Image (cartoon, rainbow, N blue to C red):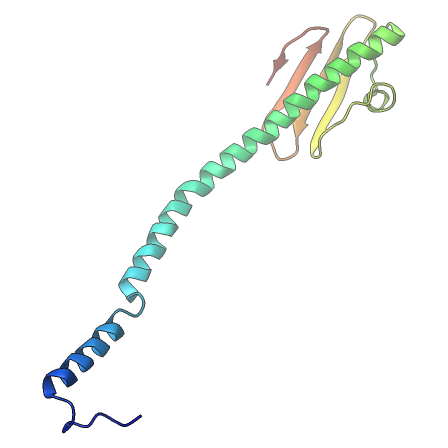
Length: 142
């Protein structure tokens, strides 16, 4: 291919070719200001979202503790049906035939148990509330 020869190509055509090439070069990518604005917007959104995420994670940990405490109450009632007394040992509830499953990070314990009533506590190690359940048929209180 030969370089542009000004004798063969009219000047108007050369100007159009040069103008078209310069336009294409001007539209290659983003300016520094545009990139900085996008980064700033992302930083603002992250600053808003991350604290909210932490609050919701703590709530989910607390909910896991409540759920495991309710399941422990059901296992206590099943134990009572078989033995006519409640147990002080949470390990008896986690084995056969009661098969209580305690979620990872959740601690459930039996504070006291008699032939007529029991008191259990539960909390998640990453949560911020310790829950108490007095049974039979009691409500869970923080």
